[in-house]
Image 1 (cartoon, rainbow, N blue to C red):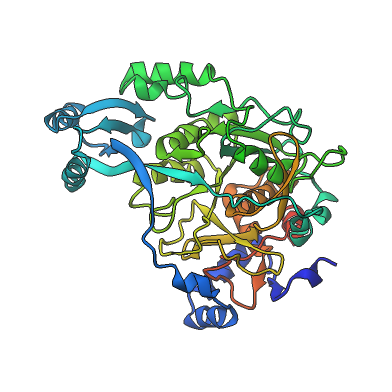
Image 2: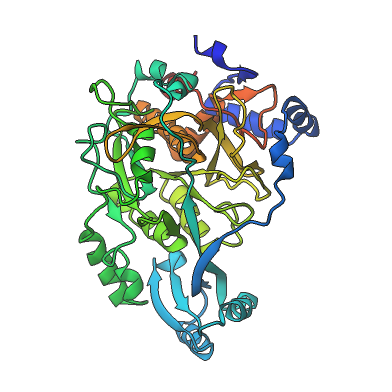
Length: 454
């Protein structure tokens, strides 16, 4: 019954295994004929052609994130930074993750950034501390059913697993743990915006910063209160409890929510907060991270050049720690020219007609798509809301990953990614498109592959 609701979508061919299906898709993607076929079958919404306005973005004034080369001597680095008349206000991470937080001389950020960027001998990466906004398009309640659950075949997947005991880390404004849909399933979490959580920054580089950072993390008040409202709606989209006679059901209703507060009441976050949150993931046993924040392309998360230190942390979480990160593509209705990164899953949004929404960003970085319009979820006051935005398509895919991992906890992260791609509903015969990435994951099919290989 669900397959009939897909207008223009067809089921991807399954090969002998998830990995083979993924490799076949990559092989087809490299073919010019495949690319042309995909573009011929898709209609580009007219408003996407007209978006030529320059992107608007913001960053912390007079603040740079600096990752030194491993071979550089600390004394040399200190001397160079001192000669630039700035101040090291803190540091994050150790070894290849070491990142200095450097406040430049007032009004000299651009000049200092250019100078340090040219010094390849001492500095590996230099970037600003960019700010990001929550990706929601508010809408009055008007729907009474969660169409997205049927679209991705979630109810069929629940016959096998509801994601019990699997964690989903929601990097957001916190989660209102007291509401019925999140009660008893929301962990203490971590506040990456608080004084305690950022002690490692305030403490500066060296042993003192490391010690203060550890103490600060342990003393964090957590994130069980939503200071803005966005985080609760994202969390309930992902994992609201089912069969409890309360409001809505999430895609992975049995999953545990681990809230990480990266934004304040104004709805903004920055690179530093996300990096601090990622450092907290491994000690707390989190393998799935959802970040429903973005900035207009080409300056959003997908730009590895602008956000080099953040990308080092993201890649480390994926390649070394074995985690998965899902992010929203953004709501600017714009083309994103940044290339796809293997450690970052970017999710676009579709409407009930199975077409790209008018607000969804799309482009070369697209990995998946999922419903993002008319999504019914629960707000922090416990009421039901209907919302639009890529903020909600991203946690839908992250939750399918939670179902897959619960069905087969031994799977490595790259296998989970391959399974998601192998299960996808496609746009025509193209294995990948800039609008939908590899397609929309079918939760039921993905769980079946995870358990039985087909």
